[in-house]
Structure formats: structure tokens, C-alpha cells
Image 1 (cartoon, rainbow, N blue to C red):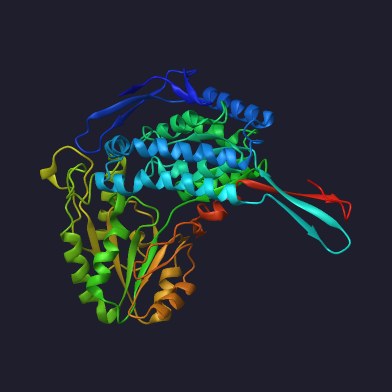
Image 2: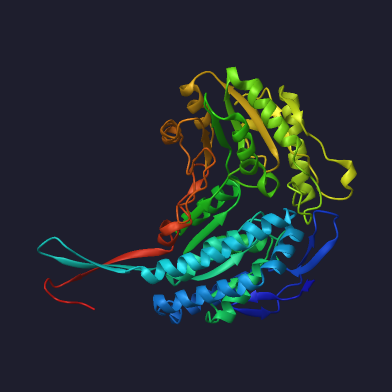
Length: 482
């Protein structure tokens, strides 16, 4: 596959530069594609198209029902390509094909339909009166959005931003990661075919220089970013110079709190997907398992058996649960953290190396660490790989203290025999989302973090609000404004 052009304002166009990137299959290291990468001049042009389209108002002034129809039609077009897109996504990311088929492609389809329904049902004007004076509170699109998305959600992460932004009436420039730039193009193609006007959406894979141009561009009203906390801080500082709006979904180091009375076998089975999906390359991964000191041996044995049973191998094979990491750099990072854990005094109970029998690829075995304290680097820093640490606690207050003793606060879970007790503990954990006994979150609930895990919320109605500005219009009391 070779892509020699950029998705600029809703169609394929030549780049102003000659930068290209190679997409490598993490399993086997074959070249999947050569893609055109945007340079700063390309990014400036895309922002200019977005600004022009927004000021002209063709999309912004389109009715909510008409915007919803475009989103729904695009969802259907992507859904028709599910088998093809799932295989492409697995080839560029390395996650198991079954996960691409069940989540990575269907979830973006669902996001588009969710925001179509939400915007169609929403009243964007509200009349408020204090008995003497009357105002109309109006919700309007925030303007031009710059969306910067990571490699671990090649299609879903851009759609989480593009769907509500377009539903609100914004224009958008997306910069996807250079490691996984292939499937996101289906989003642009589907929206264009569904009737999105020219100029409203550009999707430009690019390196740091063009990304910086997008972040600093004076015509970008809002930045929506998913990625590392370090980069998120830089974006926040840059946005502050012009008071641009930001939504930041950043790192995580989530804690799974196992309470006395928990069903240990059931917990171990259910926790594995929450820790190792996408080969452990998820910001919400449950990477710290907090267990009562009296249950350490029982929980460790159950987790060790569950981790040992995971099949590592070809991500296209249906039995594979752990595929390769996305790149050699990520593989070396994860292996480095395992070495650090050993140096700090932790024990590798399972895994801890790259399996030689799998041949070429960015492999790391799923790894369980024991003897970890919350002061160790492996307990405090985001590893972004298939590594889980067991940490003991003395009592419930100690468990909550350890869970909250982190610069992050994105996700978490509580496991116990009593749901009410689990909810009570969940309320004490300072994090954006918590699961009790592995229950999945309801669709339409907000996603985001406390502390250095981010600013703002995505998904749900809250995700739409992030792309709207409120305006108050005072009118003579007793009038009936349109």
C-alpha cells in the first residue's frame, strides 16, 4: 500500500513537501505501507481550509438533523468495510484481529451514531428569566479544532474527537500518529462520501514539526489531545498563550483494589483483559493490583496462572491474546522497565522477556511482577505494555491511600463480595472511572481523568459540550424570539 497524497479538506491532494513514513507490521516486520507525511506548510493549509469553511458557515449553519444524517451515513459506510479495516488495523498496530473486529472498528461506528442521535435531540437554545429580565442562552460550535491522536487507537481515538466536533458544527484538522496512519483515512473518506462539505475535515499524518505547527496555530480555537502527560503539559502551556480551549486525555497508572471476600479466581479471569488488552498498550490498563497482605499468595497464584495461560503470537490468529508491541522503541521501553523492576527488588513471577520462538517482531511476554512497592518506578510510571504489578496493603484505608498515591487518576477497579462496599470504595478513589467487579461502563458515560491524567471529558454528552461555547443574548421581556 502506498499513499502519496494527504487527506486535505475532504479529498486527496499533493503535499507541499516530500516527507514519507514507513508503516511496519509489528509481527514479522514487513512493510505494510509507505505514506505521505505532512509538513508545517501542509498543516497551515489545512487549518486555513478549516477556518475558511467555518467562517463561510456551510457546515456550521447546517441543521442538527442534517449534520446527524451525515454522521449516520458515514457510520454505515465504515461498518461495511469492517473486515478490511480490522485486518489493516491489526497489521499497523499489532493487536489481535479479534479485538480489532470487536472493538477498534465497531466502536467508532457507534460513536458516530451516538453523537448523531445526541445532537439531533438537543435543544441548543434555552430561554432563562429571573422574572424581570430575559436571556437566550445559545450553544455554538467552538470553531476550528486541532485533534492529535495516538497510535494505540488508530480509528477510535480520532473518531472520539471528530464525531462530537462535527456534530457541534466545528471544522477539524486531525494529526494521527505516524506509526498507525492507515485506518483513520477511512473516517475521512466515509464522511466525504456521506456529504461533509469540502474544507471541514483534514487528516494529516505528521511528525513533530507539523504537529507543533498545529498546536501553535493562532487559527486553532481548541486542541483535543490523547497521549502522554509530558506532551499534554506542553500543549497546555502552548494553548495558554492564546487561551485556546483544551481537552487532554493523558496517562494512567490504574489500581485494581482486591478486597477481602473477593472471588479470586473470577477476579483474575476478569482482570486480565482490563490489564492486557491491546497488548497492554492502553492508558486505562489496570497495571497495579492491590491485595490484602493476607491474600498475597492466593491472588498471586491466581494471576500467575491466568497470565501464564495467555497465548502470545500471530495477531491474526484467533487464539492469540497478546501480539507484538507497536514498535521497537516501545518494545525496548517495556523491556527496560522490567529490568528496572528487577533492579529495584521486584520479582518476575511470569514472563519478563521477549519470546525468541516467535521470530521477527516487537514481542514482550505478558509479565507479572511481585514484591512491588508503590514507591518503585514500575508502580509510579506508565509502562504502556503487558506488565502487571502486585502490591500488598494492610487495611482498607491503606489500600485507598496507595491507589490515590499516584500522579495519575484515569481508571481503576474494585473487587469484592459486596457491590455496595465496592461502590463505597470506588467513591474514595480519585480517578475518572472505576469498575466494580469488572462491570463495563455504560455507553454514553464520560471518559477522562483526575490529576495528571487529563483535563476535560470525552464521550457521552460531556464530550459534545467540549466543542460548544455558550452565549447569552438579552431580549426584551415578553418578546418571543425565534
